[in-house]
Length: 511
Image (cartoon, rainbow, N blue to C red; front, top):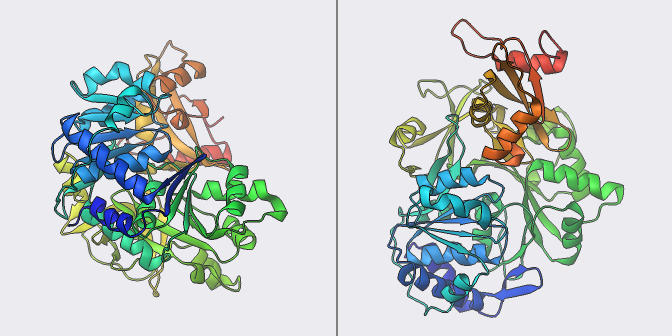
């Protein structure tokens, strides 16, 4: 059977007493995890009345319950829809409604903000708080047999923001997630019993995805409740053979916290991605951690799996060729095709920039309920990433630009238009444009240029409040620039390149 839960069941049978998940002071063995998965799967089917293919939203803090529920969904033949716990409740409500979720599982701290929106977002859907009496009752259900699913059945809806301001649900199948897991084991490292995956990043995204190959291969998961550089460095001294996924900004914060005497004896592999890693920071990381870094390039639509730069490829003499390689995002992954093409899809010669396209069993089935967006992204089996890059004559891919003006703050994606649409709700805002500004700590910060309607004077605190009421806190602008007009071309398109120049050079209206 292709069901991910059935593959985990094979591991559970072979090593029931091995540790699977460490969450605070609690350790859950593979046998206990398997029992819990079967019980929750039965409750999803019988107590909540879910049918094969129904969607279940997981909006929760990092913890053991995430693993229990994700695999229980697959065990029952339903689809997991993980969502970042940092999202605003209104953003989460959109995901609930768009996916037509039949159930939402959440943490106690998040429940008060989503409960009032449930009736409108998903009438009749169940809302279950982890740790509540209702949650405890679900855990008493008799275990059921694992559902027999097809390889191309949906397993995980990965909601990724788009330029329309509305997130789109990338439909990841059992085949996609199994291929991603096998690619991890082939390209990054094999995993054995006792190997550790440390989770300091949200389980709803890359860190949770990379839990899959570790669990399927018998490794143990160590869950942290948020990113704390000191706690991470302590964990790298306590746990053996640790692998960890981190955004580049997390890596730089570890370096800053650890200082010249940084020690990480337990570190096996530090996997970084999700944003640009500057070569100077990468050299510092190599000096501190040694040859134990792996860079990946992927998207939610091809989860964690397009190109990679392994530990051997990080090594070098510091010359021009070595630095150019460090500035790249590596070679195509095992079983993955990558091309750089022009607008017609023609492959471009080495060194010439164009759009990056990829084809593999990791590429999503499409966007949930959005055939137009699917048709634009998937053409003749190729995923058009929207990213601009160039490939050298040895096959190393270098990203030249992030399409659609994506802002990456602390490893989290922020699309300007979703912020702009919120700002335009203010009656005093005539026009606005949002861009990213370099930030030494978090990679980029959000800057909003605002044109006021005649006779009005919107204040920064009013705009800040509006953002806090509608989008996640980390997406709100850190700086508001009130200007007379936005620079535009002859077609009326805002010239964001010129806005970035205002920030850099203090040009007209940029003060």
